[in-house]
Image (cartoon, rainbow, N blue to C red; front, side, top):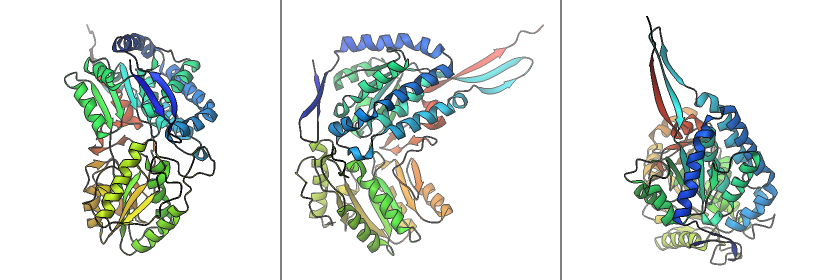
Length: 459
């Protein structure tokens, strides 16, 4: 039997362990969840919505326990208060639009025929959630999947081992049946075996490109639907008419918040040459003011990375870039221990020949390059294997829209960054993945269309 172990980035201690389910036990658990799905789907939509939102509220009631627990599991400072605001916002929006999003599409009715398209649940939805925003990323799929009438199996990342347990406990206490929303602990082999056997009707995975490839290999030949949010290398572009102070504050926060461990974090910035020097100077001053340290300390603004392995990759990218001529602007912080506690870094004199400007960093580092035109910025933003979000800074909304049309990305921001609006589809292109969550489209991806062509009996 496999033991799943969460190592706290605070001090390297074992924070939690759980035994992974053996394959036979996992099969039985999923079978129970499948058997419960039809009864759940038969409940009125309003009842499902009410139960899901009661579960969301029950998670909120745990927030005082959740915030320090997250700090211990993955290092986010307690001063930021956890994830409940976004968790509640996303679930609340999906609850509010459910009736319209799931309504029948009426094609036409006359004396002879009635024709319509109904959205029906897939059946069992498998959610494989990541550690970086473990509550918000999970609820993106859990809430609309349950509301749409699916039953849900949740598997959380080992780094945030206790999140799925807490969510399931809250939802069960609120009245969602245990078999309808089930948290399980699985190792990779059992996960792949279940997917390969067609145990699930839809799989939503958020994680690495390699993880997404493993999901596709496991599902090959089963025709199981997949939603994949994978890697990112999100750019920011600051034009000559931008609000410089706002751009610095938002883009650098987007690069460094959560120790850079954000799906849509800013990983590369292109600044018009007329603002470049001032942008770099202000950015360096901002980052030098960060306080790196114990995330349980309310004064800490930047906690450790979630795992020493992740920090080692960021250090390697920085070292390689410096060896190729990049300039590092932030002196090593005294709290940098060579492990999870990592000095945030701003690099200039960078090029796209450097991994730090091409590979996903997922850490507190950002490269900044000057550009002379929109065309140059567009070419650089598109010179990437990834496409999740892009952040454009200008006073001209039409210009932003035109540039946005030319960027290979899932979301275009203007004068903001690193935010997920539940009214918009959360999606990506290229190696960032496939499918889309939240919004009306999120419901479409968590259901299948079923057409009705009903001929009336006439005499």
